[in-house]
Image (cartoon, rainbow, N blue to C red):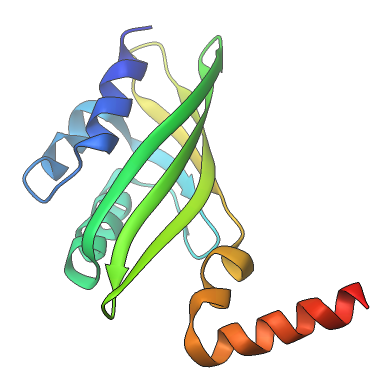
Length: 137
C-alpha cells in the first residue's frame, strides 16, 4: 500500500507549489465531503485547496495517526493556520478509500465546526459557549 505514504506526505507538504500533484493522488471523479462542502470531482477539490491558500496564512496539516484495512484508511490530523492574526488549530479525521490504481476515490472529513471553528470566532464564539453552558446546566 505505497499510495498511503505518498498521500500522507503530500498532505503534510501541501503548498501552492505541490497542489498540482493532486492529479497523481486523486481520481478525476473522486467524492469529497466536509462540514461545508460536497462535490464529485477532483477539480473542485483542487479549487478548495487553492482557495485555502488564498484565504488563510500558513495552512498546514499534521498527521498524527492512521488506521487502514484493505483499500480504506482513517487519518487523524490537526489543521493549523493563521486567520486574522490568530493561530487556529482544527482537530479532525478523514476517511479515504483508494481504487485498484491507488487513487483516492472517496474522501470524507470529520470535524466539529461548532467546537473547532465557530467557538474560536469573537462574537459567534461567545454565543456558542453560552449555548453549550445552557445545554450542560
